[in-house]
Image (tube, rainbow, N blue to C red; front, top):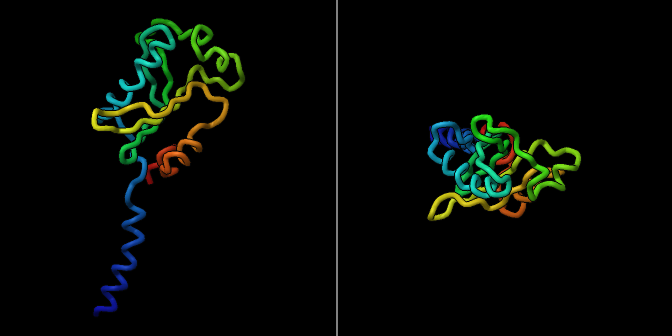
Length: 147
């Protein structure tokens, strides 16, 4: 009987470990969603010379870190962002610039969420470097990261 219990416990351990989600999606209605977006908004509003809203392509959190892929835009159809009149002009002139697609890594501190890293219109993926430097799980950065 004890042997059977031990076997059942050993069989259950890998399953329970696998079932723990890494990189949970931050969905609409989650209070952290607004806090995360509000942490990056002032920086991009200044850089783009106007108010900013985001279309969220990806937004996940793991422990005290969050990662997002955001499409900045003007609120209420106030016109397109003129990327040529921003500090991102050189990137905007290059190939692969997806209209300001922005990658952000946040860290939760005592006072709330802080932008740790950001990349606007990068020519190459930036998250592998962030994953290595901050020792974060790959699931935080990959779409479909929640098992």
